[in-house]
Image 1: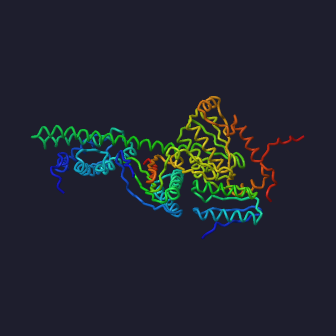
Image 2: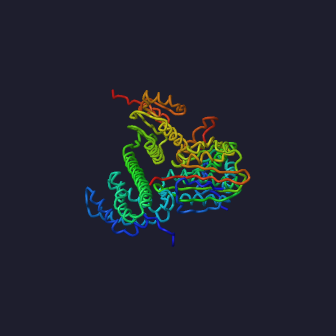
Amino acid sequence: MSKGKKAPLANVIDTHQHELLAGWLDGMLSRMVRRDAAAEAEIRQQAARFLPLLAQSIEDDPGADIGSSAWDDTRQLLTEISQSRVRQGFTPIETANFIFLLKKPLFGYLRAALSDDSQTLVEETARVSTLFDDLGLFTIEVYQKSREQVIMRQQQELLELSTPVVQLWKDVLALPLIGTLDSARTQVVMENLLQKIVDTGAMIAIIDITGVPTVDTLVAQHLLKTIAAARLMGADCIISGIRPQIAQTIVHLGVNLEDVITKATLADAFIVALKRTGSTITHAKHGD
Amino acid sequence: MLRDLTSMSRTAGDLTVVPLHSDEDVVRLRKAVRECLVSLGFSLIEQTKMVTAASELARNTVGYGGGGESHVAKISDGSRHGVRLSFIDHGPGIADVALALTDGYTSGGGMGLGLGGAKRLSDEFDLQTEPGKGTVVTITKWKPF
Amino acid sequence: MEHIPILKMGKLLLVTIQVDMHDRLAMALQDDLTERIVKDRASGVLIDISALDIVDSFIGRMISNTASMAKILDARTVLVGMQPAVAITLVELGLTLDGVITALNVDHGIRLLQEPDKKTGRAPSR
């Protein structure tokens, strides 16, 4: 397929692929803190896959708009590499260096190739520079998102371990919440609660927030949605342990708790729950 | 009719077209959407929300749009995967979009096009309509990698 | 065409919805139920949706309508077995299922129907 004159960058990569790879890998490997065979092998493989993809993308899109479809494969590979580096504990810079360390050897060959055409050299250098900046930034962005994902996943796992639903009595469950509630955490916890309600057939769930220092609108809305969902399912919820500060916040936020039974303490809530499920508390007579 | 929604390149990997002319088609669509979501690893709640939204919109297409089709597409924008569902009909269109988007859920009937609901259940919502020409509703749900 | 089976349990009727409902099936169910309520002099109807993983506004309306029809025929309706994911989605959708009482499962539903009707003070179903 003839495309007329190929972009200089694509030319350079095609002509000097071996040497480029060598120079690039040298730069990356010499910076590695821990050099083990598996990590080295992986970097070699990634670099070897990247160069031809880069060349192809440049050929298809000399304008280097990395958001366009000509760069899909290249972006895909960079995404894989970034995500793998997150998992292995690389820093963001180490991850971005995959791109940046290719600049030096590349410019070297570019200079040589265009030594008699300084006009084109200047233009091409500027374009390649911009391209590498874009690619490098993309790598860091993916790295960041990936890291966030890992953290979120770990948080979720911690959540499921740390918020057990307790069966207080026949038909009565309690969910003592401790610590700061954020939107994601609240959602997971509430879903677990609803599932437990189904599993145990409990008619009342007491959500105790004594251990929660603050509540924001999102969290309050999640609580309300959970209660609404529980009611739709045929159960009901009582909120207990609302501290004075939280009561104030709730009123200031304009959250409507009219429909919801609230009690100051878990104990009070328990008594209400017992009554509603048809039990009563009687005191045992002391033996005379 | 379908405006180009790509600000940044998004590849549509798999695309399934489901005709929507009958109730059985709505059931078929729900299965197709469910399978798509499961294959991308969406949680049960996310699946339920999206399949429910799809069911609402599909019923609209059949009931108000005079029949049409749905496009179920797996999409990706480089750092996350998702599902994009389009509901296309060449029916009467929606005359008052603002009204249609307000919640008309009354328990016993009423218009309740469910557009507001579908919007709440998905991450992205787009509506294009022209009275007399038809309607295209598109909803998207993303799953971070 | 298939009909959804209706079980008689004393004065109660139990309907278990397990398939994806479409218009004709829903209509058939409503017809069958109203007929049976009269024929069996049923005072309560239990609709079990524990097998449904999706409840959209169509099904919601069908359930509401059924409850309304049953009420006119002097029978109470209880919806049981809603899955958590469905409940959460319905809350998000804004569907409130007015006029429908819910219970966690069939046992709870039966207990509910055996209590006197709080509004009318009617005697419980036996």
